[in-house]
Length: 219
Image (tube, rainbow, N blue to C red):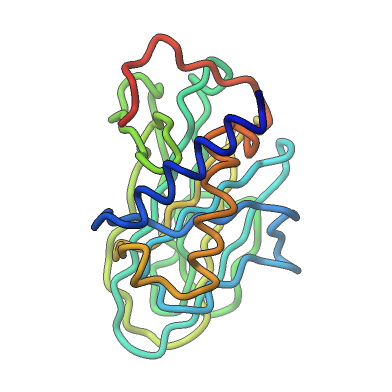
């Protein structure tokens, strides 16, 4: 049955490949994205990617980095699967870099000297958030707060994700706004789509049970 499901998913993906469907490039956290070993965005930070990650425990802080050499639009958001276990789970994140204001909040990490930070936090409950269906992954998510600004100061920038309530949970670091059709992606990016999309469809990237039977069918 599992083999049949995977074959069906691959056929679905091959059908999408032949269409002008715009999407992000998926990544899965196979190791903890720490300060010492962050996730490095090697292409333009404007290109849309979705990193399916996990805050392992209350003290876990995930780190992403990218380089800025000229003014660039930076789009970042925090997305959480709609699961019973995550009804009150939505991580905060901070964009850290040169030229940004000093944060007023106390942070669970140190920022480099001369750097500032914009903290994007969530208050309330997830039932107040917009819900959306991601068509390639085939699941519904809560769309959290967004950072969408142009930064111009050259240097290394960081994005930190953590949960101020110190909970464990799955989330997506959604970074970038430019989406592409399958044939516009590089060969490596195409492999990411073909390898990770079936896993996400089968909930294999999650670390909790996530029934969505009460939600409408996802296209």
